[in-house]
Image (tube, rainbow, N blue to C red; front, side, top):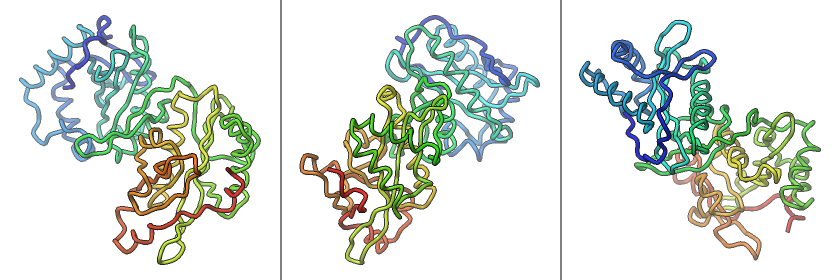
Length: 366
């Protein structure tokens, strides 16, 4: 079970039952023992990469009885909430979930698991939405988070689809962990830019930077051979474009010759939506697309404190020279190594060291 760690979150008992469109979240009972064991046994291959508690050895009746007693006591005390998840129409248990006080007093963390026979039905998103609403109904709670292993791409998609914005990358037990925060912007979506978006994109970029120069940069990249339409994304809310990001082509001048790579620039969020997680979600979505497309790395110029949470590091540490403006610190030139990089041999990695050469679209940008 997940033990509570922040008693300050307690604000009366947690609900014993939460109801969504198709699912019911309720307290575990002793009658669930056989269903629980059967579902976990049928889902071990699915669960074990992510859930340390998923064991080949089934829990005994005594262990489940202790678990039920503890989780029910925590619900009543308002210190932790662990639920069974069942289909409302059939009563079948499809997984488990919970709300956990693992951070500051104003914060609850969501956890969930779905049994293998019930994946790809949208249940995870429904669980997250029900738990988020319940968390924000708690007095004093205004932040809801989801964390997952960085390689568990499906969990990231669930978080993004449920309105969570990417917050940062953490390292826990030598593993990359991605943390998301609820943005409280119902209906936000992230998608590829379309020609019909171009005017709105220009307006958002100009407003975000307080300058037309970066808006012109977007259009210059779009008109060049370096444009990568599969890596140009917008954030849309109620039909309005509120954010934009571009990853486009550039080159490395290495000893072996020129090598094409990609760079992230620019990132823009409408001023009234800044600080809500929109920019972080755009970065995460764009990096995921770059990784899925086989890119070994992405470079950029930017604030290390901001981009470090996505895994960016000083480019110089990896043999790359990014020529930043005189007013910027050298560490503003950054790189994130994607999974494709680690699959390269030493010779191929050598081709990814050298001077980063910007395309002509950047010539007019100070």
